[in-house]
Length: 145
Image 1 (spheres, rainbow, N blue to C red):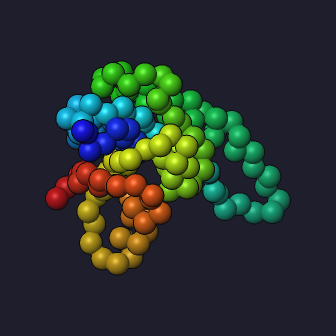
Image 2: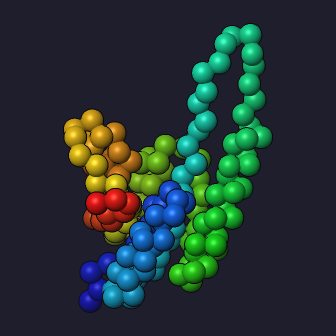
């Protein structure tokens, strides 16, 4: 019996995403598990004066489209089907938890920079995902060690 059946990989679409995907792919192959990818586009928040109305819709749409193209290229490398690629809008920890619940995920894989210090740890996305998850979470160390 496999330890994991369905793995959700939360990626940030940086160059470091490849290391996270490689680790997740290895775990999936070892468990004959299904892989699902998610990238969360965070809302743009810009401080502006009251006299200057800003419509960020076009910029937000462009960021989302670029994210879809990037996740598609990454998914193709590891043979993840279109239906298992998600680009969603919102707060990363909330959206990752929502998709994990809706898709019966039993492992979330996320990149972590492994920074030190309480403020950095408490503010990190990977830590937020860990603390609210209803399943196992693997933080893959990326970047400088």
